Image (cartoon, rainbow, N blue to C red; front, side):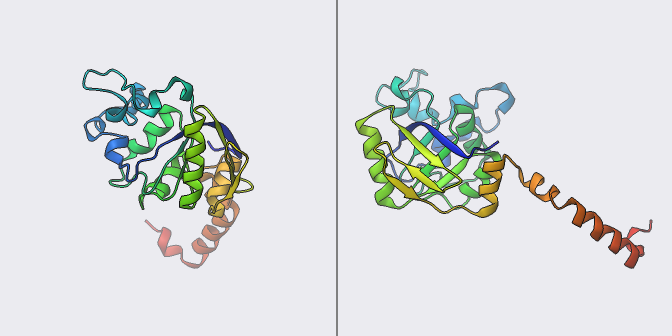
Length: 204
């Protein structure tokens, strides 16, 4: 889980308010992720027509963008309900990070727990990066988690904010449980003290 630096093909999505029902349509919520199809469900109705054929005009169907790991979105990306499939379908498609002007309020909080990084940049920065990607499909973007900098295809650099513990989770490949277990000695010492001072809590 996680990465310190990610350099990968990036996909520009220019539409505002891409919601979680577009990302992961509700009719797929009963599907089992273990079946290995969640990557197919990602933006399904935008990618495929009623017969299941790829839509020629949709950007993710451009062969030059195959293997993309980064999305550069616009405003209010992943708004709507907090369905887990919206996270998992990104990951199972191969997306490891999303850069956007803004996100739905719940999405970033849930995303990092599963190893999907969300990076928020100013409107002009995301617009500039998307324009570069549209001019050169298949171009790469770099996200440096340690330095908290996004590097656009033309070398422009944009700083972003990241909570310290989220940064640690990605750089060190830790989960929230791993971070808690780093305090195991203090937790066990507290339990010993509590058992000594409040023994009735442990009586059966």
